[in-house]
Length: 250
DNA sequence: ATGAAGATTGCCT
DNA sequence: GGCAATCTTCATG
Image 1 (cartoon, rainbow, N blue to C red):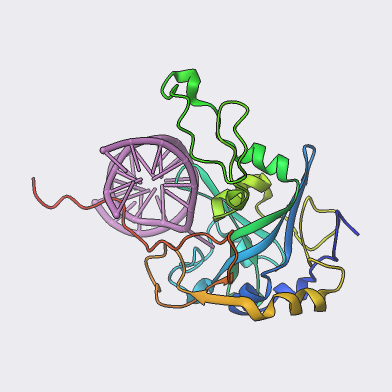
Image 2 (cartoon, rainbow, N blue to C red; image 1 turned 45 degrees about the vertical axis):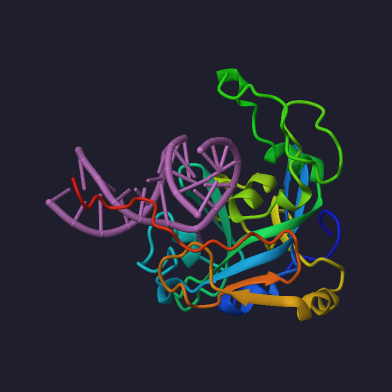
């Protein structure tokens, strides 16, 4: 047994098309153990990417250095860097047929290491530059607590709400690209919520919703985003918006 | 070599 | 609701 709670998810569970895995992996737990401690999240939102068959997938145009892990064995983490500042993590699924399918982990609820997760998610004080020294005017705290110092505490639901936030809370970065999440010795692991995988499955099976994926420009119509209905940790939907408008008139 | 866009987030009006 | 931050990757010349 590793960490706390249930057994590791078997590699065979992930070695299937990502569209099957994405809804079924909801409720499973991703945990990352570092010298600082352990943080674990129960997955509440995922998206399926179908690799070579999916225009929205990083693997659509074939294998490159960045997406190489998606073509490798299933049960490994595909971590990529984006927007110059964020990391996102996927679980590599079926790939024996070269399909390179994967499941993007979009959100989760922290179930272990909340303090550490909050520390990682607390933005650094920008006062050093003197750019934002205006104290006061904090938004109302959900718990009714006043901030002790500096910044307002991050709400619990926001700790891993969104793919980049999830990575920040778990301290997932480039160094974990390719990490095997199906072996006990790995720092990054995927396990069932309870000791009984069947019970874990039954507990979440009736409340899964689905819809279009967030922020994708192509294949925007396929409902390959899955989430646990009613979960406050599920990220808000945002349609894709091109950021660089092309200059039309001088 | 160069440039555009990106599986995002947080702060602005 | 809009936009800047920030840098890697990929496509094109």
